[in-house]
Image (cartoon, rainbow over all chains, first blue to last red):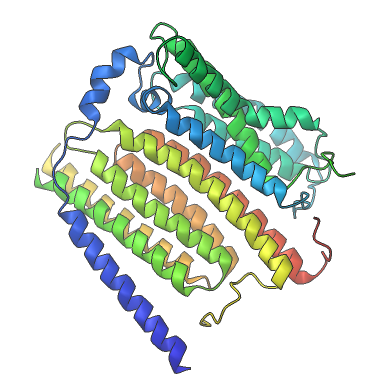
Amino acid sequence: MSRPRLSHVLTSLLAGALGVALVLILLELPAHSGLAEPVTEAMDRSGVGHEVTAVLLNFRGYDTFLELAVLLLAVWVAWSLGRQDPVPARSVRGPVLRGTLRHLVPVAVLTGGYLVWVGASTTGGAFQGGAVLGAAGVMLVLARPRSLPRVPRLGLRFVVALGVLVFLASGVGGLLGGHGFMGYHPDWAYALIVAVELAAAVSIGLGLVLLFLGGRVQGDDDDH
Amino acid sequence: MITENLVGEIYLVCGALLFVLGVHALVVRPHLLVKVLAVNIMGSGVFMVLLTAASGPDLIDPVPHALVITGIVVAVCASAVALALMLKVRAATGQARLPSEAPED
Amino acid sequence: MSPWQAGLLLAFDLTLVLTLLGVAWQLLRGVNLFRSVVLFIAFGLLLSLAWVRLQAPDVALAEAAIGAGVTGALLLVALGRLRRMASGRHGGEGS
């Protein structure tokens, strides 16, 4: 019994030392201005009025593109690990849940769309909107775990990849138009950014629901 | 503005301590679900340090905000994959722990 | 901002930070997995409060929706599947 206890003490001591070192280093952070000024200067060329959205979808569009690719990859991994296990939840009887959902899901879709649209000018954006859509989808799945809608498998795969595809198309379009990969023409920037955000939000919402289901969806049988 | 600096320092220290708590639990706790939680807590500590560094007294730096939003989505994807792998480990070995001589709690 | 308001905000920050650390410590003890998951969801919501205090409302929105909501649902469904495996009703893993 002494060896595990010794390793526990050692781990705690090392963690404490790491904590002290981190705190000392962080309190000595040099004063810096960051990237706020370059972003403010470039805002009139970005096509949107909100700094965070401009950084996410224009200045650092490459990061966001790869993030959507990560979501696609996660769904891919989850599907590679096997068929979907039924969600461990009983289907709820009675009218209350269904009635609530009938009112709540349209409101959630509206909220998600509003968040995407308002992201161009103030707080909001594709990820927040997509997460609201995903949460609505998860609730729908939980309410009827035994009777999920049969979606055609090609359509499902296409919609999950839609964000990456639209983003890639707009990026290549910028390359062909002479603005560099992931660059936009300043006049078209707003329309392109909103289109990319809408596609990204739909993909994120569906991707989160598929990750929640965890595995290839029933009715999506390649091997049978 | 001593108060402004003090607020920043409070959150910096909190971020560092959250990271350390996560590292400690990641090493010590044997259950894989707790390890997934620990990695998420570590990430939250890093996000806190990033956002505190971004919130200056006069101008707010939007680049770390964008980084953290990207990071949150990537963390969810990584957690989902880790949980799927945990279920596979549970199905294959019969227990959701690493198959080593892990110290018992 | 008056010194009175600044002091009140400082007290709020201290309380929030101490709560965050306490919740994180409790959930990482891992005594009861269900309790840990529920505490993690609460941790995500408290964290989005901290992001608001750090003047990052976009991140707060994303954290509340994704970090607390969707991650919590993922963790709960994984826990449910673990429990069903443990109770042995589910013999063959579908793969």
